[in-house]
Image (cartoon, rainbow, N blue to C red; front, side):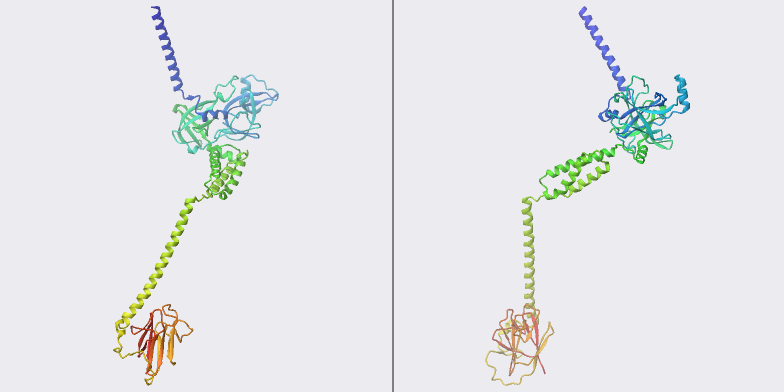
Length: 514
C-alpha cells in the first residue's frame, strides 16, 4: 500500500511540474517582447545607449531629470555621434526649479547648467552636445568628445523600401531605470511588431506606423528591419495605444540632415558597396590564376587589383572609392582574352584553307564560263551571218568566189581600189600595197585590231594580185573565216565586194570601190 501511495504522489508531483512549465511557456509565447532574435538583431544591442538630461551645478554635481534611449551612428575619435529624441533633452528653467523643489535640492548661489550625458556603463558617462535638432519631428543628433569602447554603431537603412506587413523591432531600455541598471547591451529590450503604414503623415512629417510597443524607455531608440538596418526613430508622443498603433520617424528624414551636416554614418548602401567590392576582388584573384586567359591581357587587371588590395587595408576608404574601384576591376576583367586551344587553331586554319579553295573554284568556274561564252559567240556568228561550213569544200562558190591554189600571175586584169572596215572599232584602211597583214600587235601588221584577245598576233593577210584581192590565214589560233567558210593556211580565197571576214569573232567588211 505504501509503495502504491508513493507512486501516486510521485505521479501527481510530475503532473503539477508539467502544468506549471506549460503555463510558463504559454506566457512567454504570448509576450510580444522578445529577448533573442537572430544574430543581426541581437548584435544591434551593441549600438543602443541610454541618455540622461538634467543640469550640473557649480560644484560639478549632475542631477538627472529625464532619460531616453538613443543609438550610435558613428563611433570614431572626434566623430562619435548619437541620435535620440529631442523632448527628453530639453529642460526649461521652470522645470529645473520644480525638480529642485520636489527633490529638496538647495541651489542658492549655484548656476544650473543644462547637461546631457550618454551612459557608457553604470555610472560611467560621456558628455554630449547637440549638433542639430528638430523639435517638430522630435529628434536630435549628439556629438561626444570620445568614442565609446565596446560599442558598435548601427547602420542606417532606407524607410521608403519598407512594405506593409514587414517584421520590425523597436529597441531601447526599460522605462523603470534605477541605480542598479548598468545600461549594458544585455539590458536592451527588443519588441517585435509589423508595419501597418509606410507613409503615415503626422505633423507634416513621414512616419512608419507599426504594432511594436513604444514606451518611455525606448523612445528615441531605433526601429530595425529584419536585416538589422535602422529604418526609423521611436516617438512616444504619437502613440495611439487604443488602436495598438505606434509611430517611428522615417530615417530618410534624418539621413538628409546628416548628409547636409556631413556627419559620417554607415548605411545599407555602404554594406552593398563593400560586399560587391569583396566579391569582385575575389573574382579578380581567381581570374589572374586562371590559365585559360592570355598572360599579356592580365596586365591591366593585375595593376588594378594591386590598387584594390591597398584600398582593402585603408581605414579612410569611402563608398565612392569602393564603388569606383569595383567598376575598374569589372572593366579590367572584361578585357581579358581567352587563349586559343590547339584544336581551335587547327579548326581556324582548316576554315581558312576551305575559304581559299572555294574562292579558287569560283574563280576557275568564272574563267571557264567566260571562255565557253566566247566560243559560243564565234559559233553563233558563223551560223547566223554566213553560209554553212559544209560549203567550204566547193571549188566554185555560188557567188563566183574562186579558191585559188596556184600561180595567179598569168591572169592580167585591172584591179580596182579596195578597203577593209572593222565593225567593232570603226577603223578602216585603203589597200594600197600588195600585201596587208592583219593582227592584234602593231609590230609586223598593217591593220591592227586591239582589244580582242581572240585575235592572234599575226592572224591573216590580204594579197593584191593582178586579177583581184585574196585572203589567206597566217596559222592563227582561232581561225580565219570568209562568209562563214574556214580559210586554211597557204590557201588563198578571192575576195568580192562586201565580203565578211571573221578573224576569230572580230568582224571585218571588205569593200571594192566602184
